[in-house]
Image (cartoon, rainbow, N blue to C red; front, top):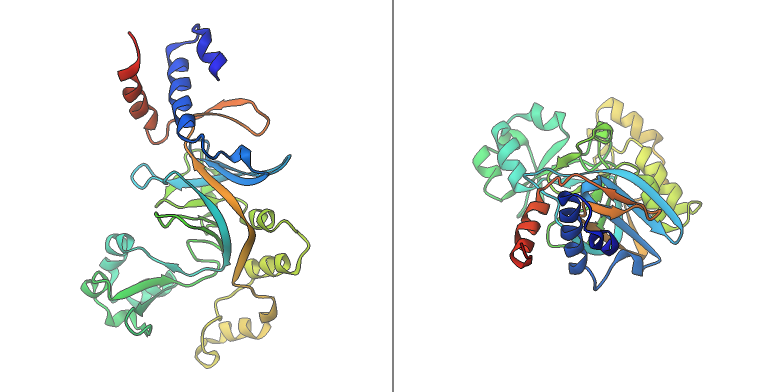
Length: 295
């Protein structure tokens, strides 16, 4: 990259592109993915994830935050996977999208939402909770785990201050789009099962078999009283292989994850690639750098 900058014969936008991305690189010198044998790298402008283990690379498409709800940049360690997670819906989404439908049982049922009172932990009939109560913080709106869950069948958790994670999605059509800025900040991954196998490092283990079964199974009866299930769910419950179901899986050893933002970055073969400045960060950095550049 430095050689390209020193040539001085490139177009102005080439020089600008090099400068802003070299500045980004300077911020990240303490810890870089290449210092590790095994890691996950998400470069947001590329809309791709690379899971690297030595010379083996697993690549997949991602969806990330919109321009309004940007995915934050961070580095952390993947600690665990949760299969068929429930989604505790953020208050911002409750206020914007759910509160207008307060009291409507059909709305909640069709989206597999339920309401839990925070103080007691009891599940409450949606018809009994008004918009004001939903927005008070005394109740949580939760989406059941399973095929219809917005987090998909599996979520990959790591410590961060933004409550963002990597996860599957029930909206698979996202990955056929060119512009995949679609989420509220989390990163949706195209090949979640393969990513889980990568993290565990053993594709033949019983744990992996359980993950595969759990991601395919109809888990809608799980956690509900059998006598209260409708006939179709009782039929599912009767055939469910409960010993093959798995909820949470620890990732040991933990795997480093980097969520970066580079509009110029080498791919896993070392070829430099350019990407669109999806969040407009290049302009911000370049304006700052111009204060230190000669005319």
